[in-house]
Length: 220
Image 1 (spheres, rainbow, N blue to C red):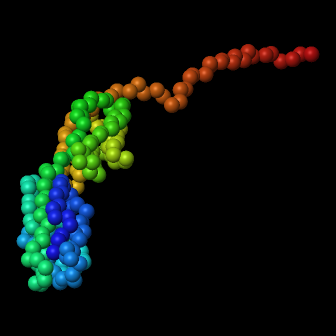
Image 2: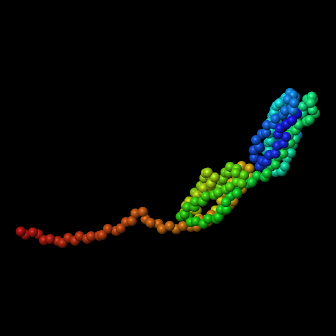
Image 3: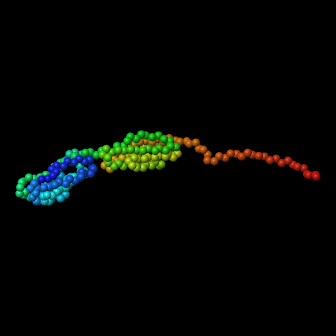
């Protein structure tokens, strides 16, 4: 009995999906129809159609969930009923390398200083070396703060009112749904004394005096 391929070598990233399953062809060199059964030892190896008759096939799938970074090995053996031509036992050697997950990286964020009369708009960026999908959020959000995550960027806005002078601490979070990282920045809001321009201006109108002089009787 022969198995093709006789070896599988895969590399995955920690807590990511496993590799594409491999279909192993199991044949008998003289084209005899030989019953066989495939077995293995490690729990991270899964077999489909593990029993059959040559020519046949066995699908080997790898489930890397929960495996820590490192090197792993297992062997799938194809046991057969007495083969009339030879006593060779076929196998497929399965090697797996698990690499550590790379957490997202948030671009450096500076502190901010504004006044109560200003609006702060900031865009936050994060990347992931494994090209994983990223999500971002911030907290805590004070009154008049907002955050929107769209197309890989985080958009932060703060429009303080005239009662919000003071210091604020806000933390930005980014996750690849495996690892989460954060970065905290400060916002200093200074008092603002805007010039208050009256909505309506009242100008005094000119004052006029009228004088009446007595007129004597008309004598004709």
